[in-house]
Length: 107
Image (cartoon, rainbow, N blue to C red; front, side):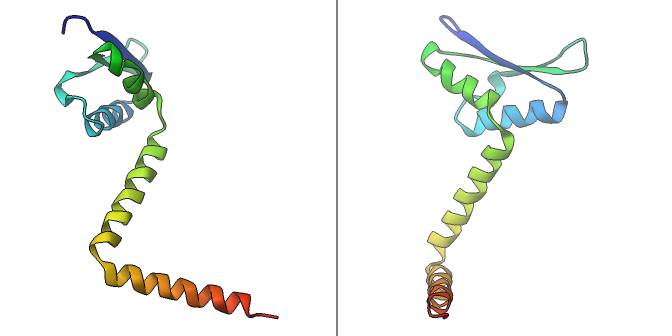
């Protein structure tokens, strides 16, 4: 890639390196442009050559928390499920409303 910059991070395990590659891939970066190299101390370097305007986003994805990303994806999947199943969503909303009403009526 001409006119590209390198975004990279060092992670302690191959599993963490593959997780970083998956996060980049899900964010729209080409999976085959992500390099994973073993470092002498047993850790792994994950790097991607990207255009300068995408460098900050790639760095943010690489250094971001995998747990936060997984939670965000789980929330999005749950929201998609509720959008696809309106009856379940309305039933849960009604149940929550009854529970809230019951709690507010307590003396």
